[in-house]
Length: 285
Image (cartoon, rainbow, N blue to C red; front, side, top):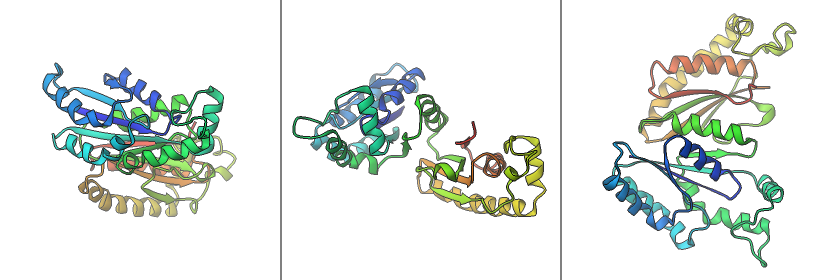
């Protein structure tokens, strides 16, 4: 059995996450009382007609505060039944959440005549703290549109069929900020930049002209070897510590050339050694 628990602050994209999971064969339950989590897992194990049942539940601030505070022990009960259980926590910055509620004119579940929307969002963060602290995967949806969020959930959750660690090697551009879910970050802006070559500017690190240019640089090769040696040594140790998800982010200025080239090379090489390696280019359109 595989169980995915979806949580996060209101407006962060929980409904979208549940829709993606439902479209991919999961039986989904919205706003499950957290206290029923162990019982749900037990019943799914005993009564399901599926050989490998897929269940996803949303647990959020509409729960009783006493149930939310007990989440750590409830999660431990579920995992004691040897169920593969992932906790996905979605969030966005407060300005983005305020904007989303203003645009949709929805009422926040914790707002009332005595509590403003901004105060409700802050209270919600405190209530969901026990879940956020135990999240296997956190996704910041601040800069993601609907389609990008769907793609991210598919890549991170649905491409991880086994219980082992899922490694993501991700390129990015510093001009759009460091990925908030990155566990290890490498800055490769010191390397020769194809952007300053007019004939290479419109090509990406996936294309032959840029690949040939960077492959000919001794500095690029040395950087690649150093990063590869580090990851080859330490990623298995992350896995040994029972980490469900590990993100390695490689950044250059714009996220189109150097980081893309190195991410592709590292991803392809690490796939020969590690079981579950995914590659993503955040800023490559």
